[in-house]
Image (cartoon, rainbow, N blue to C red; front, top):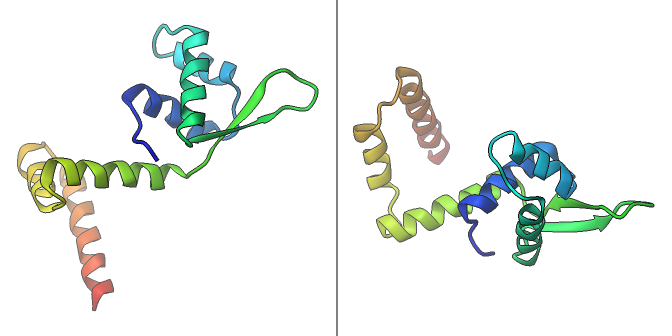
Length: 126
């Protein structure tokens, strides 16, 4: 499945949060953030369908189609992160983690969450 562009990801986030949607519902959600043409949203959703990220079904008795994501958000985002790590860090997550810890202003809570996740992973490997 082809990776998502920034605009496609923005649309998919709306769809994941709302579930089954029409083009109009996505258009209205985007309008709250920025100006966008209805036809642009319709075109982007058609592209997402062609890329395999969306399926559409006819709504009973209406012209509008309902769109559904083909994969859950976690699976798609996970694939994007893997692709990013492969492309930028030659497949190693360590430099990314080091960068996040050293260069980003992580809160104590975020650091604790990372430590907890690492501890859980260590325990599960035993």
